[in-house]
Image 1 (cartoon, one colour):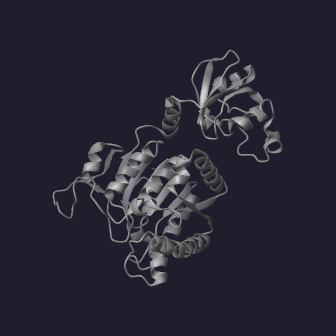
Image 2: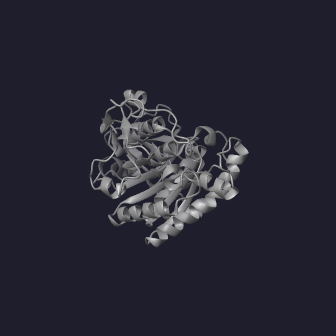
Image 3: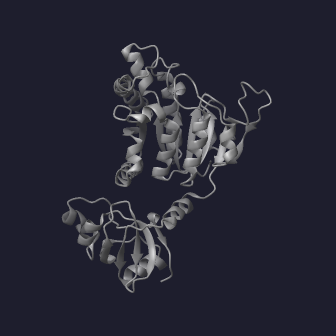
Length: 371
C-alpha cells in the first residue's frame, strides 16, 4: 500500500448520500480531506463516485428509486449537477482542482475512445487535477440496469494503469460467508484476486440505495488484476480510512494481483495473435527500441503495412522483415504513412492534430527479438 502511487478510489452510494436522501455534504467533505492528504503525499488519485441518481431523486421529490429507464436517466441528469458541484466545492476547499469525467462502458470498449479517455485522465493527473468519475447514466441503457460503479472503478484502474483500486463500502470487507446469517463466518484479510473461491464467498445484492453487492466487488478486483492493480475492499466509515490504508495499516480485505502492473500489460500485448498491421523501421530505430528501450518515433519508420486503427496492436519490423517488437499504435495506418521519416514536431502540420509524439510509446511496446 505504501508503494502505490496511482490510486483509484470508489465510494458507494451509502457513503456519499444520506441513506439515499440526497448527497451527504459532510461525508463528501471528509472524503475530499482524505484525498487531499494522499495528493500531498505525492500520490495521483482518481475518485469514482456514486450518488447522482440518489441526489436526483431528492431534487425530484421521489422517495423510492424508480424502475423505468427514462426515470432513472432523468434522476441521473438532475442529480449529476449537484454531485459535480459538491465535489468541486469540497475539493477546492482543500486546495485541489477537480474535473468531472462521465464515462460509459462503451467508451472503454471502443479502442480509440479508450485511448482518448486514457490520454485525458493522464493529462489531468499530470496537472495535479483530481478527476471525479461517474457513469454517464443519462445516455446509457443496460448500464443502469446491469452496471455498477465497482466495475467502472476496475475499468478505470485498467485504463490508467493504477497501482491500487480501493473499493469503499458499507461492509468491513469479504467474509467466507454472509456474517449476518453465519456467525461462524471468517474474515478474509488477504487473498489472490481472481481466485474462483472468492466468488462463492461473496454475497448477493447490496443496500437498497446502490446496485452492487460483494460479488460485484470481487469481480471488479479480478478485472483490475488484469492490468496489475491490487484491490482493497474496506468499510468506508472507518476513520481516515484512506490515509491509514496507504500508510500500510491492515484494513479491510486485500485482493492481490498476480502480476506487476507493467508485466501484466505487456503480457497482454505479447499474447495478441491477430496483429492488425506492421511498420518497418530503419537500423537506427532498431537500435533505439531493442538496446535502449526507447519509444518508436515516426522519423524512424520507413513503411507501413495493413489497415489498422489507433489503439490496435501492430508489429514492428527490422529492415530485413524480422519482427523485433509489437505494441499499441497511436495513429491509424493512413496517418502513419504520412508520418514516415517525419520528425514528431511535424505531426500537427501533417495531420491537423497531435495525439502523441510517438507512434508507439515504450510503455505500450514489447521487444520480441534481439537486434
